[in-house]
Length: 152
Length: 77
Image (spheres, each protein chain N blue to C red):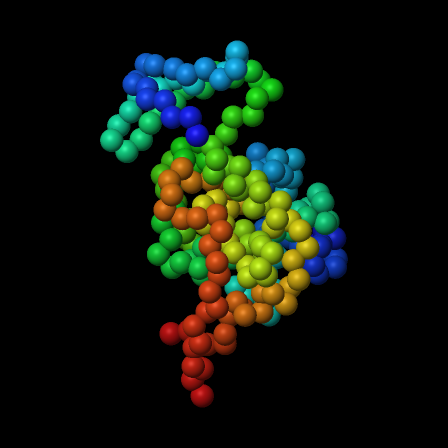
Protein backbone atom coordinates (compact mmCIF):
# COMPACT_ATOMS: atom_id res chain seq x y z
CA UNK A 1 0.00 0.00 0.00
CA UNK A 2 1.53 3.38 -0.97
CA UNK A 3 2.39 5.84 1.77
CA UNK A 4 2.31 9.60 1.84
CA UNK A 5 3.89 12.24 4.06
CA UNK A 6 1.15 14.52 5.33
CA UNK A 7 1.13 17.99 6.82
CA UNK A 8 -1.08 17.22 9.82
CA UNK A 9 -1.02 13.45 10.39
CA UNK A 10 2.54 12.21 9.79
CA UNK A 11 2.88 9.34 7.32
CA UNK A 12 -0.35 7.71 6.17
CA UNK A 13 -1.04 4.69 3.98
CA UNK A 14 -3.60 5.15 1.25
CA UNK A 15 -5.29 3.42 -1.63
CA UNK A 16 -5.93 4.91 -5.05
CA UNK A 17 -9.62 5.11 -4.08
CA UNK A 18 -8.68 8.09 -1.95
CA UNK A 19 -6.53 9.83 -4.55
CA UNK A 20 -7.94 12.79 -6.44
CA UNK A 21 -6.69 14.27 -9.70
CA UNK A 22 -7.02 17.98 -10.58
CA UNK A 23 -6.01 18.15 -14.27
CA UNK A 24 -5.60 21.93 -14.04
CA UNK A 25 -4.47 22.21 -10.42
CA UNK A 26 -6.22 24.72 -8.15
CA UNK A 27 -6.23 28.53 -8.36
CA UNK A 28 -2.81 29.71 -7.11
CA UNK A 29 -1.66 26.05 -7.03
CA UNK A 30 -1.87 25.20 -10.72
CA UNK A 31 1.02 22.73 -10.54
CA UNK A 32 -0.46 20.68 -7.72
CA UNK A 33 -2.53 18.01 -9.38
CA UNK A 34 -2.66 14.92 -7.17
CA UNK A 35 -4.23 14.97 -3.75
CA UNK A 36 -5.53 12.55 -1.19
CA UNK A 37 -8.78 12.90 0.74
CA UNK A 38 -8.02 12.11 4.37
CA UNK A 39 -10.94 11.60 6.75
CA UNK A 40 -10.24 11.13 10.43
CA UNK A 41 -13.09 9.81 12.57
CA UNK A 42 -12.52 12.32 15.36
CA UNK A 43 -12.21 15.24 12.94
CA UNK A 44 -15.55 14.82 11.20
CA UNK A 45 -17.05 16.44 9.25
CA UNK A 46 -13.73 17.94 8.09
CA UNK A 47 -11.99 16.32 5.14
CA UNK A 48 -8.28 16.99 4.61
CA UNK A 49 -7.07 17.38 1.05
CA UNK A 50 -3.41 16.43 1.23
CA UNK A 51 -1.10 17.04 -1.74
CA UNK A 52 0.63 13.86 -2.89
CA UNK A 53 3.38 15.99 -4.41
CA UNK A 54 3.98 18.52 -1.62
CA UNK A 55 3.89 17.10 1.92
CA UNK A 56 3.59 20.65 3.30
CA UNK A 57 0.43 21.39 1.31
CA UNK A 58 -2.87 20.33 2.80
CA UNK A 59 -6.23 22.05 2.48
CA UNK A 60 -8.77 21.63 5.24
CA UNK A 61 -12.23 21.34 3.74
CA UNK A 62 -15.84 20.79 4.72
CA UNK A 63 -18.56 19.18 2.63
CA UNK A 64 -20.69 22.10 1.43
CA UNK A 65 -23.82 20.33 2.66
CA UNK A 66 -22.38 20.36 6.19
CA UNK A 67 -22.39 24.17 5.91
CA UNK A 68 -25.54 24.65 3.87
CA UNK A 69 -27.74 21.56 3.30
CA UNK A 70 -29.52 23.43 0.48
CA UNK A 71 -26.33 24.38 -1.39
CA UNK A 72 -26.99 24.68 -5.12
CA UNK A 73 -24.18 23.67 -7.44
CA UNK A 74 -23.55 25.74 -10.54
CA UNK A 75 -20.60 24.47 -12.54
CA UNK A 76 -19.51 25.99 -15.85
CA UNK A 77 -19.55 23.82 -18.98
CA UNK A 78 -15.75 23.86 -19.04
CA UNK A 79 -15.45 22.63 -15.46
CA UNK A 80 -18.15 20.02 -16.02
CA UNK A 81 -16.17 18.64 -18.97
CA UNK A 82 -13.03 18.53 -16.81
CA UNK A 83 -14.69 16.10 -14.40
CA UNK A 84 -16.67 14.16 -17.01
CA UNK A 85 -20.23 15.43 -16.64
CA UNK A 86 -22.59 16.95 -19.18
CA UNK A 87 -25.15 18.17 -16.69
CA UNK A 88 -25.00 19.52 -13.15
CA UNK A 89 -24.17 16.53 -10.97
CA UNK A 90 -25.97 15.71 -7.72
CA UNK A 91 -24.01 16.50 -4.55
CA UNK A 92 -23.13 13.38 -2.51
CA UNK A 93 -24.50 10.99 -5.18
CA UNK A 94 -22.39 11.91 -8.22
CA UNK A 95 -19.82 14.21 -6.66
CA UNK A 96 -18.18 15.06 -3.40
CA UNK A 97 -18.41 18.81 -3.03
CA UNK A 98 -15.99 20.47 -0.59
CA UNK A 99 -15.47 24.05 0.58
CA UNK A 100 -11.91 25.12 1.40
CA UNK A 101 -11.50 26.40 4.96
CA UNK A 102 -9.14 29.19 5.94
CA UNK A 103 -8.66 31.12 9.14
CA UNK A 104 -8.46 34.91 8.86
CA UNK A 105 -6.74 37.10 11.44
CA UNK A 106 -9.73 36.99 13.82
CA UNK A 107 -9.31 33.25 14.32
CA UNK A 108 -12.82 32.26 13.24
CA UNK A 109 -12.64 29.84 10.30
CA UNK A 110 -14.36 30.69 7.04
CA UNK A 111 -15.22 28.48 4.08
CA UNK A 112 -15.09 29.32 0.39
CA UNK A 113 -18.58 28.58 -0.93
CA UNK A 114 -17.87 30.64 -4.04
CA UNK A 115 -15.44 28.04 -5.35
CA UNK A 116 -16.29 24.51 -4.23
CA UNK A 117 -13.97 21.62 -4.97
CA UNK A 118 -16.01 19.12 -6.96
CA UNK A 119 -14.80 15.52 -7.11
CA UNK A 120 -16.34 12.93 -9.43
CA UNK A 121 -17.13 10.05 -7.05
CA UNK A 122 -16.38 7.42 -9.69
CA UNK A 123 -13.34 8.71 -11.62
CA UNK A 124 -11.99 10.90 -8.77
CA UNK A 125 -11.32 13.67 -11.31
CA UNK A 126 -11.67 17.01 -9.58
CA UNK A 127 -11.90 20.73 -10.22
CA UNK A 128 -12.18 23.79 -8.01
CA UNK A 129 -15.08 25.42 -9.76
CA UNK A 130 -15.28 29.19 -9.28
CA UNK A 131 -18.90 30.24 -9.62
CA UNK A 132 -19.86 33.08 -11.94
CA UNK A 133 -22.76 34.30 -9.82
CA UNK A 134 -22.87 35.96 -6.43
CA UNK A 135 -25.14 33.52 -4.62
CA UNK A 136 -22.39 32.38 -2.26
CA UNK A 137 -19.35 34.18 -0.84
CA UNK A 138 -15.70 33.22 -0.63
CA UNK A 139 -15.52 33.91 3.12
CA UNK A 140 -18.54 32.24 4.69
CA UNK A 141 -18.08 32.32 8.47
CA UNK A 142 -18.57 28.88 9.98
CA UNK A 143 -21.25 28.41 12.60
CA UNK A 144 -20.92 25.70 15.22
CA UNK A 145 -23.29 22.79 14.56
CA UNK A 146 -26.48 22.84 16.59
CA UNK A 147 -26.38 20.75 19.73
CA UNK A 148 -28.04 17.43 19.07
CA UNK A 149 -29.33 15.75 22.19
CA UNK A 150 -28.03 12.20 22.08
CA UNK A 151 -30.62 9.51 22.75
CA UNK A 152 -29.78 7.80 25.99
CA UNK B 1 -13.41 55.17 -10.37
CA UNK B 2 -13.71 56.16 -14.00
CA UNK B 3 -17.22 55.55 -15.34
CA UNK B 4 -17.81 55.21 -19.07
CA UNK B 5 -21.11 54.38 -20.76
CA UNK B 6 -20.81 51.95 -23.66
CA UNK B 7 -23.21 50.02 -25.92
CA UNK B 8 -22.80 46.58 -27.46
CA UNK B 9 -20.15 46.76 -30.17
CA UNK B 10 -18.28 49.61 -28.50
CA UNK B 11 -14.88 49.29 -26.85
CA UNK B 12 -12.57 50.92 -24.39
CA UNK B 13 -8.81 50.87 -24.54
CA UNK B 14 -6.43 50.58 -21.60
CA UNK B 15 -2.91 51.78 -22.37
CA UNK B 16 -1.87 50.89 -25.92
CA UNK B 17 -2.50 47.21 -26.06
CA UNK B 18 -5.56 46.24 -24.03
CA UNK B 19 -9.02 46.43 -25.58
CA UNK B 20 -12.26 45.56 -23.85
CA UNK B 21 -15.28 45.30 -26.13
CA UNK B 22 -18.89 45.07 -25.01
CA UNK B 23 -20.18 42.18 -27.12
CA UNK B 24 -23.68 41.75 -25.78
CA UNK B 25 -25.87 43.06 -23.00
CA UNK B 26 -28.95 41.59 -21.38
CA UNK B 27 -30.92 43.00 -18.43
CA UNK B 28 -28.79 40.90 -16.04
CA UNK B 29 -25.49 40.24 -17.78
CA UNK B 30 -22.84 41.85 -19.93
CA UNK B 31 -20.66 39.81 -22.27
CA UNK B 32 -17.18 41.31 -22.71
CA UNK B 33 -14.43 40.49 -25.17
CA UNK B 34 -10.91 41.24 -24.00
CA UNK B 35 -7.84 41.57 -26.19
CA UNK B 36 -4.61 41.79 -24.23
CA UNK B 37 -0.97 40.74 -24.60
CA UNK B 38 -0.25 37.18 -23.38
CA UNK B 39 1.77 38.52 -20.45
CA UNK B 40 -1.30 40.27 -19.02
CA UNK B 41 -3.27 37.96 -16.74
CA UNK B 42 -6.99 38.33 -17.39
CA UNK B 43 -9.31 36.55 -15.01
CA UNK B 44 -12.59 36.99 -13.23
CA UNK B 45 -12.30 38.71 -9.86
CA UNK B 46 -13.81 35.63 -8.19
CA UNK B 47 -10.84 33.58 -9.39
CA UNK B 48 -8.48 36.10 -7.84
CA UNK B 49 -10.45 35.94 -4.56
CA UNK B 50 -10.16 32.17 -4.62
CA UNK B 51 -6.40 32.35 -5.24
CA UNK B 52 -6.01 34.58 -2.17
CA UNK B 53 -8.28 32.26 -0.18
CA UNK B 54 -6.37 29.14 -1.27
CA UNK B 55 -3.03 30.69 -0.29
CA UNK B 56 -4.46 31.50 3.14
CA UNK B 57 -5.91 27.98 3.42
CA UNK B 58 -2.50 26.47 2.63
CA UNK B 59 -0.98 28.09 5.73
CA UNK B 60 -0.58 26.00 8.87
CA UNK B 61 -3.99 26.01 10.58
CA UNK B 62 -3.99 25.10 14.29
CA UNK B 63 -6.34 22.13 14.40
CA UNK B 64 -7.82 23.15 17.76
CA UNK B 65 -9.56 26.01 15.93
CA UNK B 66 -11.71 23.36 14.24
CA UNK B 67 -12.94 21.85 17.51
CA UNK B 68 -16.13 23.94 17.82
CA UNK B 69 -17.19 22.74 14.39
CA UNK B 70 -16.68 19.00 14.86
CA UNK B 71 -19.73 16.74 14.59
CA UNK B 72 -21.55 16.13 17.84
CA UNK B 73 -22.36 12.50 18.51
CA UNK B 74 -25.87 11.72 17.37
CA UNK B 75 -27.87 8.77 16.16
CA UNK B 76 -28.87 8.52 12.57
CA UNK B 77 -32.51 7.81 11.84
